[in-house]
Length: 306
Image (cartoon, rainbow, N blue to C red):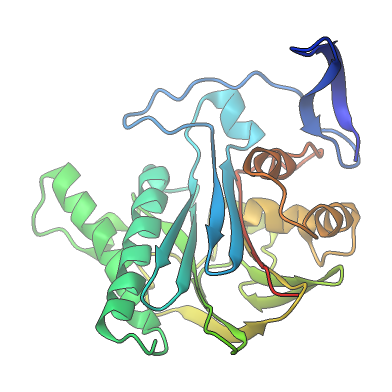
């Protein structure tokens, strides 16, 4: 899709360069707002973007604040985390979507992704085979990190899940992608909550875990979340073939994506055929489309195998 606006200028050698300004517009554009800086402590940046290569995989990750929070100056409540495990040639990718009704959902998401990634890495350290991921342990450790944070911040050392859950609540989506010589690329993925994992294959989006959320779920109604439900996870395994792209998404992207057959699905299928650079990936995620103003996060994994 064409950008909202473009401006030309002089390059360093006298050539013309074109600077792209404004988000990509898909369908009817969303209102243009100037993002308010976040006042909370610790400070949360409006946008994070990451990516790189490992084990013959290329990965991109980005998390952008939604228009509603930009307008009000509230913090981004999504987060992402990437980690590599060299001994088992495994890429660990984690995404969290903080529950909007929880006042410290931003902190919950940030803690959950890092503790979940560390929990998977510890399991791989213990058995270089690698074994099937013990998802109950992964989600249990992430949940307990939220309880510990509540105990620290509240000064209540005996507080438990019932006290922490109303304040620190988040969904969590975790994937481990293992690349072994002369074997298919193996994906293990699990989720607590509705943030979906999908595989993009020939312009078709195949769901693995999670599901497209209902609009009511944007307020957290009926969504399973940590720390309250660490055992309410769905899991799946799959091999990643040539041309397949593994996608981990928050509901801020899953809602406009829908079943993948609409305008957003067509744009993503086209633009994600090959890995964009890190900045372009974040800009793609920050598209403008009317009525969709939630935080958006996405992790995408491509294989270099042909």
